[in-house]
Length: 63
Image 1 (cartoon, rainbow, N blue to C red):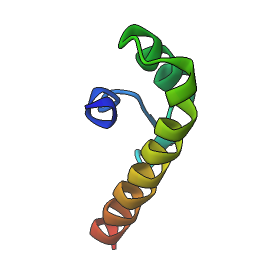
Image 2 (cartoon, one colour; image 1 turned 30 degrees about the horizontal axis):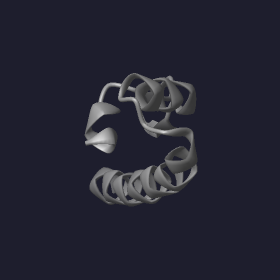
Image 3 (cartoon, rainbow, N blue to C red; image 1 turned 180 degrees about the vertical axis):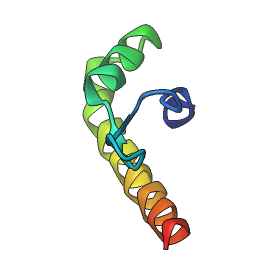
């Protein structure tokens, strides 16, 4: 759910290409979801893995 909550928080280049998730917004989303501090680090890694996979798919579609 956290990754889906970040759907509107992607940084996009001036040419319209996705760069990645805004991590400041990710931290805010975790706080708003009342995720305990000790779980945030592992969730951050999980979201980064999903972000990387999403960017791979995005780049494949651009070619």
